[in-house]
Length: 552
Image (cartoon, rainbow, N blue to C red; front, side, top):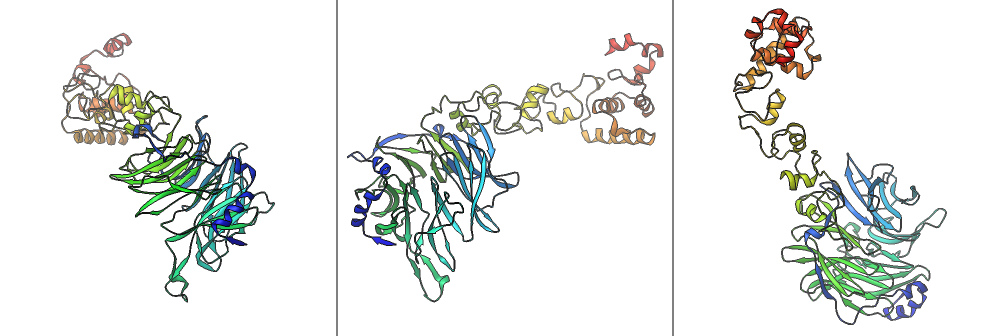
């Protein structure tokens, strides 16, 4: 292995494959101009209240890790077909790495008892494959075509890392260590055969005690060319150096610059560089895909997510400053940026689509635009966010209920059941204002829209007892009496039981009459005529179907 200075690196650049030279990114002479500044309504919420991590965008899909149903799993969602699928075969460890997307492949590294398992899923053919198990601790990885680059601990030295390359074209891929030194390397990136990474020397307070060593916060930007085996130092002694991102012949990283963290762009073939981020705030941890760079900016009031577009030479600002943000991903088509933030008190995935007008787009076809879904905190991919039976649009526009609350008035009935089943007011705990909640009235067989005195079947025109616990005691009393006579009350339907209890409490019917009814004499009690009146009628009248029909 040979190490070269930056000047020698320029000569070595001609060894880079021809397709890379054709795709050099060239900026305009002027600095980046201010572009659009989005609002929260422009950004779309992808997940809701789930424990998620590591969004990875493809051309028309997104993959991510989510804790669901008691386990960590890797999911994939296709924006065009709106189909979600789980990609892993067994539950993932909580510290699984990835996913990383390349074309229509999704890669991840799971932490199994045997080590760190390199795995891929081919979305085109729905095939799953485990490639290799790395016995040492892996910290991060990236993929280009069939090359996987990753940083991992070194056997026998737990203070350093090395950069390894895994060629998936090999029949049994084994990693190649391309650094093999006593330094600490960050997570590498790759484009073509150009591999870049940050490198930090170890600082040890006692050379004889390896546990007292730690990596320096001042590092170097390194480049390794896979085909020619050249390793070169781009920049040295950089304070607050981040991981290095690589695209085509361009490197991007963040570093300390005049007392602030700044995002720097470096052109591999010319050796020139410039600062792409604003210089009045800290900017750091850039992600780079094709001609789009995204990075965090700490401004007054919170952290923003900024982007810079090469060619167009513009930059813009995304996100809600009151939220903490992490884990940026950019689609290979450069039309979407995704990230994780907690603006709604949970770690959720949000994304921005350059081709979508959030004010008019309605991805779940519920009548609410995606912009309004963000405004109300609803899920743009679920027409009924809180699963209460009403669409988000119905709740927001028609009924004025909360689309993220199953039971807006907290009376025990879902908003959907209030509207669709009982015609009660989903905004009122007690629709008829008689002192009893809608749920209590319905559970006890009463009309929640009719205040006392009750004039509905089964109440016999009497005013309801003020203390419902007394009703409960009466019902237990009746249940015990019937059970003592051999009646299996648990097999009586709820409607029939309500009729019998009401007759016992309010109708004046005795246990003997109700027992006769339970045994099959359906004229032994009546559900609206009191016992006193019903007993006074001739038996033949009671048994008359015509008379009963008139009464009912």
